[in-house]
Amino acid sequence: MKSGSTTAEIDAVKTRIESHPGLQGHLSVGAERTVIGVVGQITPEVQFEMERMPGVMEVVRISRPSKLSTREFKEEDTVITVGDAVIGGREPVVIAGPCAIESEEQLMATAKIVKEQGAQILRGGAFKPRTSPYSFRGLGVTGLKMLMDASKEYDIPVVTEVMTAEDVDMVASYADILQIGTRNAQNFNLLEEVGKIRKPVLLKRGFASSYEEWLLAAEYILYGGNSQVILCERGIRTFEDYTRFTVDLAAVPVIKKLSHLPIIVDPSHSTGMWELVTPISLGSIAVGAHGIILDVHPNPTVAKCDAAQALNFDNFRNLTRKVRAVSDAMMSEAEH
Image 1 (cartoon, rainbow, N blue to C red):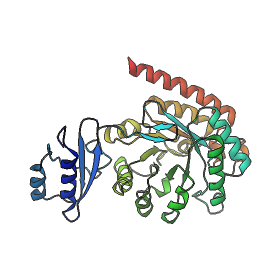
Image 2: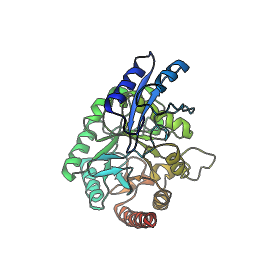
Image 3: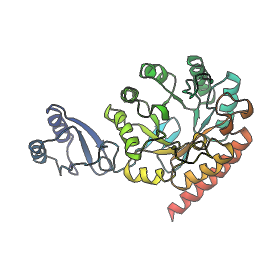
Image 4: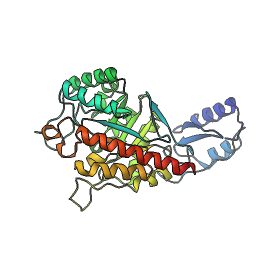
């Protein structure tokens, strides 16, 4: 739309778009212009009609499969605010907590140190998708209740995974952010369902997904009307088997070029080794990630889930100190 277009002109164009069967309009209001993203097959006749409506500056076709997640649709970065956490802003966020909630004592002790060290969001798994059916698969609703109690006790927003479309509303009633794990990254029924809620969704990259496939997964959520999508690079499967997965740090600048959505990195699940979590965290911040998500446990040696990658409290303290130093250096450099 043209700079200075009126609300009436914008509404008229969107209404006209949606009067055509199969077309849907999505608004992106920026500082200098408003974009109406059209999803559906636009005929030359419809394009001709749109170009001549009052307030329309131009009609640009986006040739890539993904539409709503692209910079063509929205030039400005998407910034998501949850409590005191700002995801997609100048300062990176730290999300930390136990991979799996095991007990109230374990969760509360971890929440306390997470809050004390300045992390902005508490993570905790209540429903755990595991490769083996014999592994610990979480406490379910009991774990969600514990997570909500920890959120209230330490005044910190929480993120947890949802595994099925049927559980979305229930999990959303306990959590501030819903996580879609790597195994569900192309569970399109689930993606459509979280697109209907009005809470942020943390979408992990599928461990065999290309950048385009990852953005198309986000597209399902955006198409449903939920604009609050956080992308998470969590490692991809390659020929290398020394680490659990291969961390693709190039994904950060690439996604920031292609998309307006914020992107964070998961150094814990990508490496599977606690001693690699700190260097990968620092590298993530250095290449421009909007944050990191970490596994922290009071005693990793007895953790019921992914023990080898969890940081103990001392290691977590050291990591947050180093992350602050790199973050400060990056922001100082950006100002000069």
